[in-house]
Length: 274
Image (cartoon, rainbow, N blue to C red; front, top):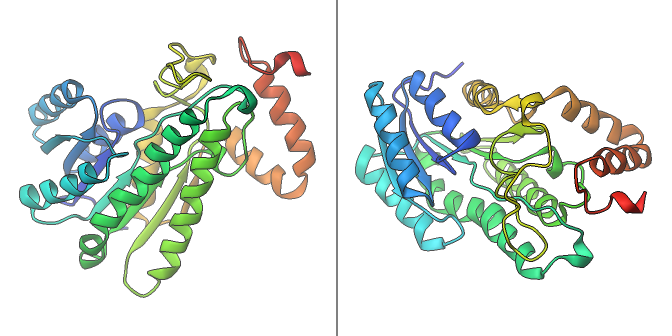
């Protein structure tokens, strides 16, 4: 197992949820952390908390959907810590609406943030990661392995990330680069609160019982363990693992199960279609 002590880790989407949990967990393992997100105020608060615990941390306001922001993030990391050992592409946005009712700008925003954000950050960090025989990870979702109704843009972006990361792994079979895809199931975080509705407005509240989900801290722990062990894939939650397994042997059955499960959400956009 490779320790993360003194390793330089970039975490995108670090201001809340899984990203924030990754920052705390990485700090507890002695890593040096670069925090990146759009909310500078939250980054500042998080940075102060981590520094109070003795962590080496730096933050930079970053919108991963903007290429130059990602380029600057890498440059700032090198300026601050001199190298990059781990890049965790965690920034993301979700949606909840039927495709035939969704403005196409919503799909584009999800692709710009989830897919292109991963591509931009990875592109500029890659030479430095290869130099360190480091790791690049993408926080995907079970929705990146099984399409979820009402989340067409989200699933599309996560499937696109999977193809990108798998191709990247094969291209770097002999460079020493480690590539990890992480597929959490439903996780207690604010991603559903900030999910986009059909018109691009924020949903504002979660349609699911967050208390029954895996915590962001647990996801962060599993993910950093997978990086240390240089695993290629990580599927989390029993429900997520069961969905992936059943989809391999009975995809039509899983289609029905997924539809029925998602239709039970409060105010589900397609509950009337049952």
